[in-house]
Length: 630
Image 1 (tube, one colour):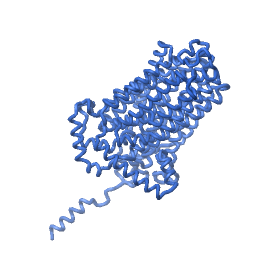
Image 2 (cartoon, helix red, strand yellow):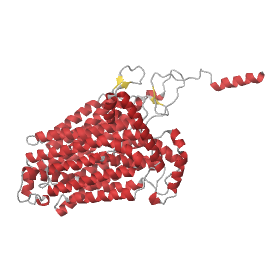
Image 3 (cartoon, helix red, strand yellow):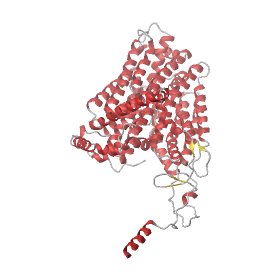
Image 4 (cartoon, helix red, strand yellow):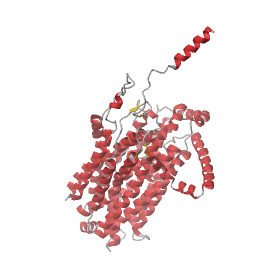
């Protein structure tokens, strides 16, 4: 991960044509390779928001970017455009700071509604399945009596209905986001980052408005609380939080130099965690003051509306009109080529296009090992991705954990908000303070490679037994063990205080994802791979499918079927997923070969080049003497 060479401000960003062209040519890869190992998120939506290497990364990495020759062809117009940018006042020039300033507000808005949303789901389901004639249509006053809340929160029928509703909403948004994010990412190349991010934010605003309308008039609207799925569908069609996150990262990559991108992405992650730590607490304070969980959604809607206005009228676009024109021409050409391919390829080409978002997964398939003497295929990368998928699927149990706490401990959105803030703060401290210190203390440093004096003498790197990423592999396994212990204790917790303590313990397992990303890059390069952007794009697809589709489905169905008899079953499912992940990571081994300056592996059987061969320079000198004599 590269480090910043100096602070970057609105006024001193390098916007010369050459640097900007290089930034565009390598922007997407740098986004994934530089930032991905550190982009860990406390909740599902934070993961989507700060995880730019899902299906959209594949689009940004592999499509719609001009190569060096095309960049040279457009150099004159690009230079004119950049000169025009440098003459603008600072408030009209693109800079990463625009989105860095806005990130805490949008993440706070999203985090503040997590806990109240579950409570309102319970209230709406209770109105339908356990109606109270004195409060029909008045969601604000439904639970003015604590007895009314307890009777609904502890009702298995209501809990099962809420689980079903949450499952449908999550799956609808997750599937649609997975299918549309790549398209929105391509559109951002052709028509601008800010326009696409604005569309995604408008989707969130529509979801908020739909939520408020259903809360107020659920008894009068056809379909009742099931109309909440309309807002989720609209948000998914407009890209959802994954499009917002990917657009923000693309904007930062457009503006920042490669040497400073890692710094800006780290700042973005820190501000994201700040919002997810503060948001639930602010939501709980507001609910405690107003005694109305719906009030949080009014604040979220206002913030989304202001955010959309700022994107439309204040935040400058990072792509110049000339660049967008080039991308539009390339897109038109690619459409024509795809049309010809469909005409010649028939049904096979149609299926390939329909499931194109899964194409990056081919990178994870086992391949022949590059280690000399190895006859078997290397399954390490596939096993690592499968283990990552099983663990990341645990993010899908968030809503059902909240339901479990409401069922077992009678918690309202106020208590759930404080609980969420405690977990978010612990994660932030662990990732930003404790984990870097632990890594610095225990991670082995690579030794310098010494050339052998004799052809039979091995290099010092060959004698080295510890791979630089061996600590990361150990950390990933240890993180799984920590979560296994924590989830076991959470299932047995007799009260909410102990449950919170054990949940805080589980946050120490968040080091799993950065560790797995580090190991994945080591395994990939160990096999001869170089394009880390494609690797993290493939892992992004695994993350999206696992956390947004498979995880919510498994936990939702389990909770619906067991809430009346064994609500702790969701923790048993979590333990099963963690155990499978640990078993998949167990056989992975890291080799410790020497590496050249390009990061390529030097196989154990490679012969050391000796000085027996006559140097080319000596041959040229001999030819020169002979020519002089003649």
